[in-house]
Amino acid sequence: MFQIQAFVFNFASENTYVLFNENKNAWLIDPGNMNEQETTAIANFIKENDLKIVKIILTHAHIDHVLGLQWAFDTYKVPVTMHEDDKEVLDMFQISGMRFGFDLDHINVDLEYVNEGDILDFDGEKFKIYHVPGHSPGSVVYHNENQKFIISGDVLFEGSIGRTDLYKGNYEQLIEGIKTKLFVLDEETQIFSGHGNPTKIGFEKQYNPFLK
Image 1 (spheres, rainbow, N blue to C red):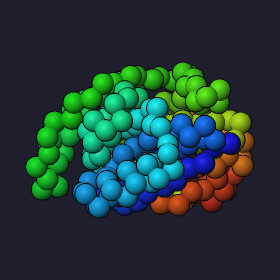
Image 2 (spheres, rainbow, N blue to C red; image 1 turned 90 degrees about the vertical axis):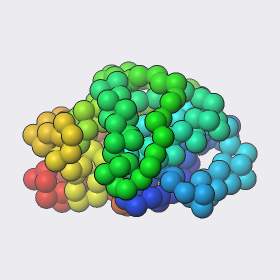
Image 3 (tube, rainbow, N blue to C red; image 1 turned 45 degrees about the horizontal axis):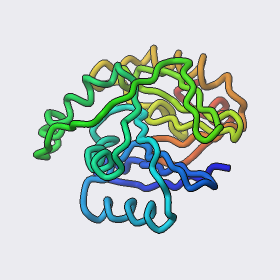
């Protein structure tokens, strides 16, 4: 059985997740820690629970989801899993920082790419990959069917969707992807989003005003 610990980090109240199992293996998802206090909080959780980070996972590469990425890579020394279509977004990290008044160094990490339909194995548990662009070109959703949950990044939120006015955003593409790839899942599937509270597929199908 998986457990998931959420941390709310940085100026955007971004959700960083640590997903772990009874073997104490863990995925670090969207590390958004941006200062010493935030980094200490997540590092202490990992250490105190004796977790081994076996993958660093990105749902997408917008600045608020990768502020702690270099630290994560340097600390845990495992490759970063993402979709190749967001590589140029990751490469814009310094420029994005300037827009927010941050002086940031270029991110230099080892990358492993996933695409639509790929399967990631986590100690025998399978995670299916859905490529759902529209918020960013390489946004992906990670789905564990056995335990009925998805890590959705900024694709789908409680009562909302990811903004589509950013670089290479596309509203119609995002709506289509949600309806054809996520809304076909079991309605009890829990959604762990990039911002805000967890929700469920059934709830969003019924109440999300963007998807009526």
